[in-house]
Image 1 (cartoon, helix red, strand yellow):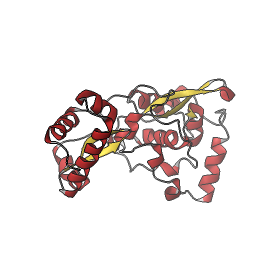
Image 2 (tube, one colour; image 1 turned 90 degrees about the horizontal axis):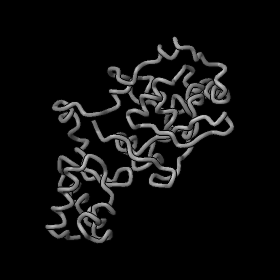
Image 3 (tube, one colour; image 1 turned 30 degrees about the horizontal axis):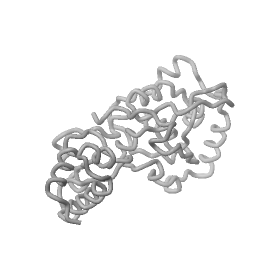
Length: 242
């Protein structure tokens, strides 16, 4: 499709100044164009960038469109500027985030049961960073708060939705580990955990130094999907990229 020069320029300008994915509906409203024309233009621009081997890409992420640097040049870009990435999350934070991402909606005691330690501190930090949010209550656990991931989580990890998380089969634990995880998940009353202040204080901070590669499969065995983003159960987006 040949995109009119004026429409192309306007769309590129909006994408350039946006710090979060921009929806087709929002672009169409701002530019006073039809959603169909904007959608076709975005697809065409994205394909042009791919074919032209540009240093950046236009990608559809978390229900919207956003410009990203090309993966082929990430090492060069990284040497120039330190971007937000998983290395700024501690091992404890990655573990808790993995449990929530793959087992959502899940309560604090559910996260504790999988990790085997008190996770209150890291969950609070993940909420502050906008990666995790409250999605409901569990009446079977005394109205305990249930947590799930946010649109910010999708943006940071480059996912359209949680269905694009790597299949857990790729991280399958050995039978003994899987059995231990299932036993912990069955102990959601937290009776097997150390909830003392010392245990909570010992839990690592989210903002530590470098950590091992994100390995969600080592912590959970099932995935539960949340309602689609943008549903009535959704909440406002978290903060933009740091």
